[in-house]
Length: 581
Image (cartoon, rainbow, N blue to C red; front, side, top):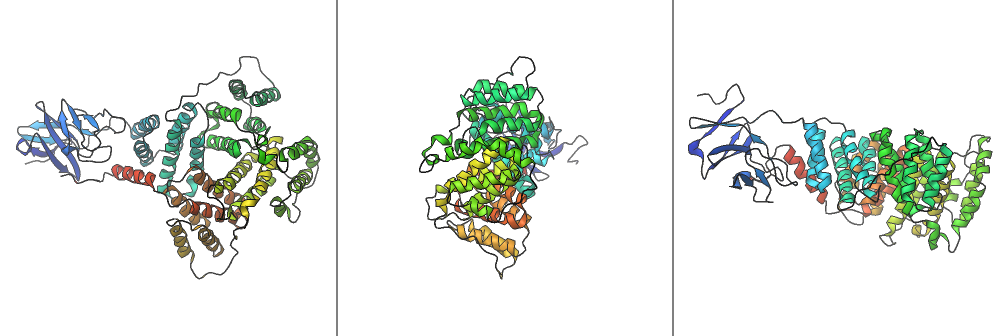
C-alpha cells in the first residue's frame, strides 16, 4: 500500500492510533503531533516554537492548544500564537482517507523567510524578547540575508522609540556592526543578537522620540545653520537644535559638513558626559556607513537629546582643581585658528622625539604646549588623534589592579573617547576635532594616578609555546577571575611569536560574545580592534594587550545571553530539546 502521494501527503497513522484524541508520529525525522478536536483532525509540529517542549503533552480546549511549560497558547486549526513571546507553531495539511491519517509535512511557506524573520525581529524589539530576537537574527542569516537588513531594522527602531535619543544600545549595535569582519562566521550572528537586545533593552518602557520638522524658511547658508545649531545646544534647546539639524540634512550638506557641525557643538564644552557624547556621535556616523547615509535624517537627530543635556566637564571639580584645565584649554583655543593657519603652510609634521611620552607626563601645561607646537608645525587632527588614542591605550595596559574595580571604567572612558576622535578626524579636519584632541589629552593626564604603580607592559621575549598553545592559554584566563596580567602577557607573547593577529581577534571576539559583557567591555574590545587596524602590528600591539587585560578583569560572567542564543540555534536547526514522550 502506498505511503505517500504526488501531492506531498504521507500516511502517518490510523484512527485507531489516537489515544485520548491525540498521537505522536515521526516522518522523515520530523516529529508531528496529531489532535482530534470537535470532530476534526489537526497536525502541528510537536516542538513548541518557544523553547521546544513537546506539544503532544499539551492540552486542548475550545480550539486552543496550550503548552504546559511556559503556557504558550496556539490556535489549533492554523498554529497562530496568542502570545508574543512564542512564534506560530507550524501546522500541516491533514486528510482522513477511510481510517488512515495523511499529512503533508512540507507545505509551501506562507511568506518568504526574509519577510517572516524581519517581522519577528520587529516583534522582538517591540516586546523586548531576547529569544525572539535571537531566532530572528539566526533565521535571517540562515536565509542568506545580508547584515544590513537586520541592522537597518534595529537602528530604525532604536532611533524612534527612545525619547532620550541615541544611547548605549545604539552605540553597542554600531560597535557590533564594526566587529563583523573580524569575527568567525557563527559569531557574527551573536554580534547582531547582542546589538539587537541592547537596543531593545534601552527602549523598553521608554516613551518614543517625537520628530521635529525642519525649518520652513528659504535656503540658509551652512555657516548660519552651524551657528544656530551650536547656539541651540549651548542653551540646551533640544527642539530648536533638532529642527536646525534636520534643515541642514534637508539642504543636502555633504557628510563632512554635517559631521563638522555636530563635532563643533560637541566640543564647545569640555569632555561631555565623560566622553560618551563624542563616542555616540562617532558610532552614529559609523552606523550610517553600514546602513547608508541616505538615512542621516532618521539617525543623526537622535543625537540631539544627548548633546543638549550632556554634563560639561568644566563644571566638575576634577577639571578645575588643583589645576584649572578648562582655563588652560580656553587659552589654547583662543589661538587655535592662528595655529591652524600656520600649520597649513608648514612642512609635513613629524613628531619630536619623546612626543608620546609627553602626552603621558604629569604636567598638563607641557602637554598643551606640545599640542600647540604640533599644530603650528602642520600636524593633522588625524595624526594627533591617533597618538592620543595610543596614550589612552597605555593607561589601560598599565592600569594597576590595586585600584578600585570601578576605576577600570575611568581609563576605559578615555580610551573609547580617544578612539571616537580618531574616527571623526577621518571625516573632518575642523576646529572641533582639534578641541576634542585637547580634551582627550587632558583626560589622559587625569588618569595618570590609575597607573600608580603601573602594571608592566610585556616586553618581547622568547617563548617555548607555539602560537596555538598561547591562544588556548589566553582563552583559559577568561574562565578564571583576576587573570588580568596573565591575559596581557599571553597576547604579547602570541603576537611576538608570530601569531596571526586575525586569529587573535577572532578568539577575543568569540570570548567577548559568549559572556554577558557589559556596555563598557563590548566598547573596549571593538575600540581595540579599531586601534590595532589603525596603527598596524607594531604600534597597535598595545591596543590588544590593553583590551585583553580589560576583558580578563570583567570575566567570567553568568553567560545567560549565550544560553538563550544556544537554545535559539538548536530550535532553528530542528533539534529536539526535550524528549517527545
